[in-house]
Image (tube, rainbow over all chains, first blue to last red; front, side, top):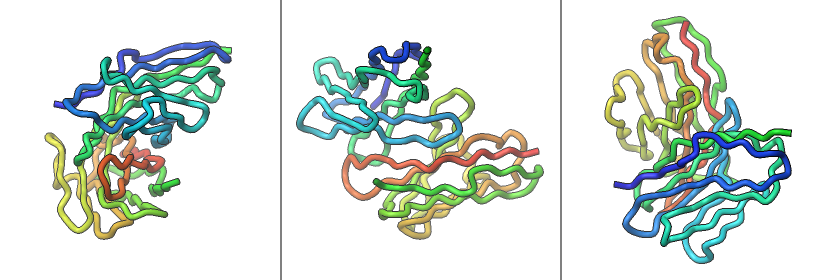
Length: 112
Length: 116
């Protein structure tokens, strides 16, 4: 069965520091991969997506993610975090079929 | 980008009343719409999936008579919480997806439902 694991429940980084949020998936073939961000009391916003091709994908708000097939990972990165990036981040996988599976989420705290 | 509008954003009502939440895709045709429930500090819990013109598919443990879903057109889906009780209080989020493999889901801003 397909699954998505976000190993870190929460992460704290200093403003201006780099960020990496981890995501691992389980699926037999190449999945469609997504990262979403959710601010408190709001819905989810799509940051970026991977379908095929270049394994390093660029998203909005300065985020990028790299698909590594050998590690079944799709980690989200940002070189310099801003206080406004504090939010909940969800990794998701779709098998191209009907359903998208979401990870449990990682809450990002940014300290001044 | 694709926009999904969810209304209302906040509802407070008495126990026993029914509440309808609307989800509209504003600039694309949503072949499939999803309804989620989210508890504080937790991930999304998929309640049901609906395709335009057909009955919704409910996840295990979700009462279909309690949570009525209608997806009458390619741009509108509604969730009606019937005879709501305090335990139904939650944050409900809809999302919509266009046709084609691997299309991302686009989310509404959610509805905070509080039952007194």
